[in-house]
Image (cartoon, rainbow, N blue to C red; front, side):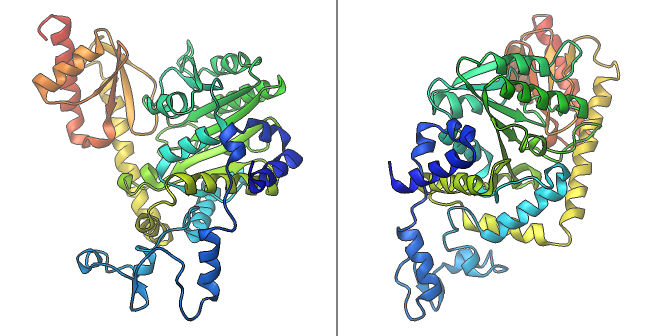
Length: 433
């Protein structure tokens, strides 16, 4: 093993040995080179006052070389902030500003030890890093039965981990904390579990309430006290889009320092929070360990990025940083939030109106981009009927569930949308599809 990797492992073993046990084989082996091209280029950037012949970019007249056909559309930005490589861990100022934002929006993190967020190429990349660093073949990844399908690709297909499912809702249509607890405790023989907490949930658009949040944290604590090392990952892709009386913070704050056998990891990003899906800017943050251990995990994370994508896109990081620092940012974000909340409320109003009879029920939703109908007929057949007869696209999940993204439908069009879905359901029910 490389001495740098061993040094990071030794730090974790000294300060937080249970966290060290959670690392995968790759997680133990990965490190950030200190004597390679990156470190030498960084040193030259501060000391090479005559010529800096270290970095793999082209320059002209003291600035990164660029084409005017590109720069003319980006004239508000200095070329050095868009054309050069971003550091593997992301723009330092962006990392600091995002950390400040996270603390402001999640008061429960105050006073907890957390790392500086590392910039990822959006949230999927952040989850992939979690898989690389912590998931080995045969490890358990605990998720609800209604979840984002990419989890399976990320953890099962790529890393060989076993997916362990529990029912999302209990008999009272609340988050099934007891099911989560049972699924975790069932991993006693493995001694380790990775649990993914995605709130608001894709696909059903549900965020637990405050009491449910406490139950979730208690379930994870119970698993830790039973001797199970828990990698607790909050997938906060839709953070902030809370439209009703639910948790208004990430559970990351409550999980930081919960137990020596619990490692809290927050994966979030500007992707959906700031409505910049194509920018591909996310973050991964660790919490609840010693400063030295957090630094070790940060270095392993940056080493992973260096070994895969090298670094994230610089222009989009610059764009996000500029937006976060703008005095117009909060007002504009609030405006978009209200539009999204209006759409969610309109959907619930329509579904509760009685207009559609008993042709479907719906899973509880209160946040995010989506909601799910539970149909009395085959969901895939309805999906096909909607496409072919009514020009409507939806997502069929399993035999009964139909996911509807109200996020991309104007509020005035929502009634027409659900009218068309209702017609398609009736078509299938009467054999006219």
